[in-house]
Image (tube, rainbow, N blue to C red; front, side, top):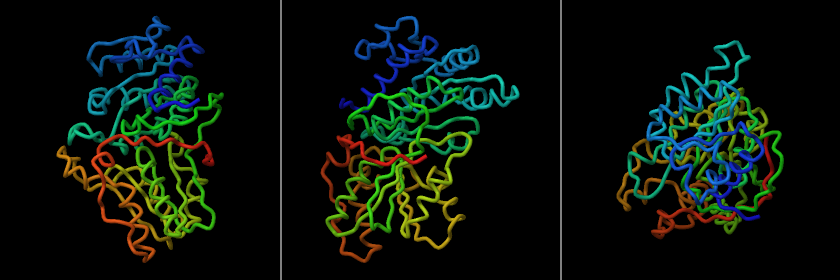
Length: 345
């Protein structure tokens, strides 16, 4: 069935609440009628006061007592008030007790771009979570990812963070509700006879897919590797690195500043593994996102800037100048994802 990004999130929570009586939903606005969470599972859904540190601590405590709390944070900047519980307590709990005292709490945090949110509410801080040992990190790009990641956390014994890109809220996909035994590290959109790959994650996937269409019109085939799961034991598998290194031209496409970020780390590992590749880094500048529409216009990457960069390095005449409509720059993409990508573990 076709579901949007937020619908998939709600469906997965309802599934977990029904099938696991120890699964709890905790946070602000979780009792809203339109989700049906509180209405159908009153005792498992806990609406909290506005105190992020307090209810994160409540969730960590419950997780150490056999529950599986799923915590909502509407903005990353508010979740930062609870970082002590996420990083100092949850992520290190099992290690501090010799590996036999689990803390299976999950924190879902909204991140990233949205027009009008300006410098203070558009950050991601992905590298903080990537650098925290003991946390499984999920960054869904599709509604299917949302379903898979959330249903998996209900039975995952590790503390987890799900970074939810609000820019993807109007994307949709045919959701396949299946039992999840193992989460893939990402999705591979393969194009045969291609020597170029776009490596991305999160909210950059729609622009990468659109740029591929432009490049195909110019006779250039590109593959896309979209990362979505970064396990605590090894953030980037050998399979991922081997897959990337098969391509001559590699473009790391990030919607957050590149230096110190997720793809910066992956680029370093790829370079160590094989050092004769043509590697390119595309990302916003290392400044906060502005508020004014004209400034946001040139801040984020888009499908035209990505396609033009590939064309420039291929010595092909550029497709277009960076001229987009207001809707292209400021409104959520309405991509309908196909289900034909290959899963990469």
